Length: 94
Image 1: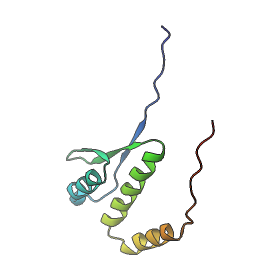
Image 2: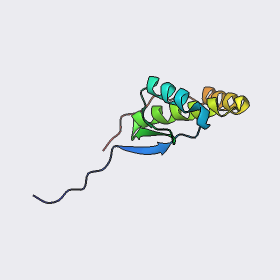
Image 3: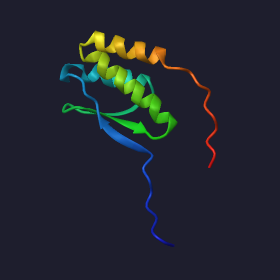
Image 4: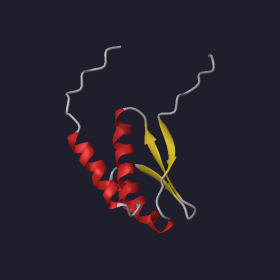
């Protein structure tokens, strides 16, 4: 049997929040279905690849911006998301 390399179906990313907000960020991400690794040194998230990963990335960005203490940046991002056109997704043809 030939040796096969497995492709990981996730990537690990450090969560950029103030140290005092690590516990709150971890809870918020877990509630959104994002897997996290939490320690005293910091917080990292497992981001799934593919369409499921887009929800993980959105949750991560929202938590980071919400806890960064920059409400205007969060409002601008949410406004941009609201204005994005909604197109029905076509099935991927392979």
